[in-house]
Each structure stands twice: as C-alpha cells, then as structure tokens.
Length: 242
Image (cartoon, rainbow, N blue to C red; front, side, top):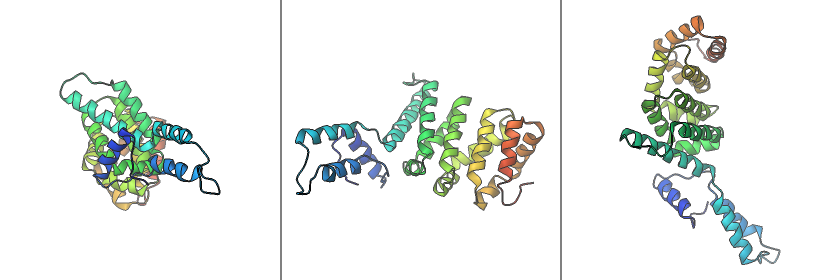
C-alpha cells in the first residue's frame, strides 16, 4: 500500500488512522498505483496512455469512496450526532438519517475484511455509545444488527465485541429489561446466535442466570418468530444453558 495521498480527504483519514498504527485493507491507493505503474505500460516499458489519460484515471480513483472511508464517515456522523444531542444543539442529521447511515454500515460490515477494518478503527466504541445514549427503538435494532454482522463467522469481531465492557453491560441490561415483544430483544437474540459460535467463554456469559431467565420468558410467552430464533440459538450451545 502506498503512503502517498494526494487527495486531501484521503490524507486526513490516513494520518488519523496511521496515528493508531492502522492499515486498512481496502484503501484506493494500491489500486491507483498499480494502474499507473503497470496498466498503461507496453512491452518497451513506456506508457501507452497520455498524461491526460493518467490524470483522468487519478481523478476517477480519487472520486471512489473506499469502504474504509465510508465506514469512517459514518462513525464521524454518528459521533457528531451524539455530541450535538448531548449539548442540546440541533443535530445536523435526524434520527431517521442516522438509521439510514447505520443500515449502510451494516451492509459494509457483512464483509469480514470490512468488519475487521471497522474493529481497527475502534468503531465498536461508537456502537457502544449509541447503545448507551439512544432510546429510539429502530436505531437500537439497527445497532444490534451491525454488531450481529461484525461477529458473524468472525473470531476477531467476536473477541473485540466481547472485550468491550460497554457493549457487554448494555447487552446484560437490555436482555433483562426489554419486554419479550420488543423487536430490539429479537435482534439481540439474533446477535447472541452469531456471537457464541464455539467460544466457551462467550457461551458461559450468555448462559448466566440473567440470560436464562429471559430465555425461559421468551419460550413461554414469545411469538413464533422469536421462539424459533431462540431454539435455533440454544441448539448452538456446547452445553445447554438449562
């Protein structure tokens, strides 16, 4: 990956990320340098394209938003939203717009490479802040959906989320306080299903009495959708919680 960044926005992100010793998998620079270094050369090693062609290619590449840049931008918008809200200021984006941004984030982190880049950005801390500070049910649902995608078949994501005390404390609180009919609770069960895999430490945590009590409530009073999801989840435990 090249560390030459002519685009100002790229340079800003690169400087901030490298200050944390982060290297993203999917920045554009490597592709741009490959095209400029190899894509336009003939057998005599001379460029086959004009200077104007190369400048055009660079403009095209600079206009492409990499997945890492998109995720970083979403984190910035979320952080600004929470900051403005905490100060009682008018937020630049609405709750509905924030939900749209989080939906976009969920699609991005379905890729394990993107999910791991998101972890490198410490994006899970922003998700923890959202879980703590947001009351909107649709946004909470979407945050748990993002978390579900991060941990799906991804040991790196599972470990990072498990080690985040804020997210784990919110998980324990919401599993005990949310009503059985809550759509957020349904998404939490989906998250747990993706979260446990073969990690016995995680399985032990979500087998504690707080969780078991809620599982029993769901099985006795929940609708068919959440009961089916919970039964599927319980079958993934190495040792059944009850």
